[in-house]
Amino acid sequence: MNKTDRQRVVLEIVNTNRVSSQERLRSLLLERGIEVTQATLSRDMKELRLVKATGADGVGFYSSPEEWDHTPALASLLPTLFHSADGVAHLLVVRTMKGGAQTVAAAIDWEEWPEVLGTLAGDDTILIILRDPGALYEVKQRLEVMARPD
Image 1 (spheres, one colour):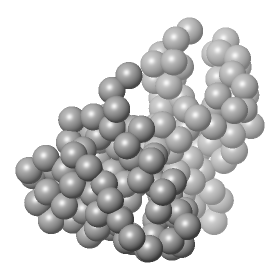
Image 2 (cartoon, one colour):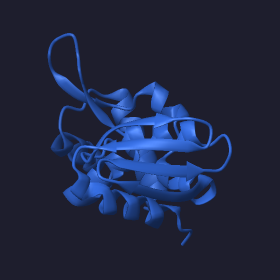
Image 3 (cartoon, helix red, strand yellow):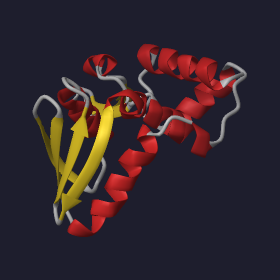
Image 4 (cartoon, one colour):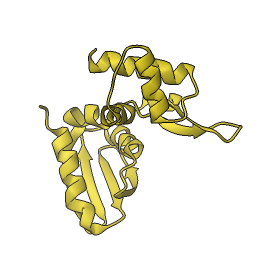
């Protein structure tokens, strides 16, 4: 089974069951004849932007927030919208194509990178505020690598 089909099944399972752990999700996949490693499942869940929500009963379960369906993945946006990045200390300025900054900033926010405190976006410029100035080069490089088409 290819990745796309496997991820489609993961979403189907999560949307129709209250799955409280990755191990339970692996078990449900196995019942459908899909064997997957924990590492692969973790990557799939990150790419699908699954989050752990808490029900009224206090029990956590994985879900796919509806609003995320309208926020494209950062890796799919950067190759067409990214122009450049430069910064100093805690501040990284990202330049995008006209009209692309807010969409890219929202995608950066959804990534929930631990180094990023927050973003501010205009029309073609994003200010990324970093928690630690030592992370500037790493975040800048991560964005530049994602922006390069394979």
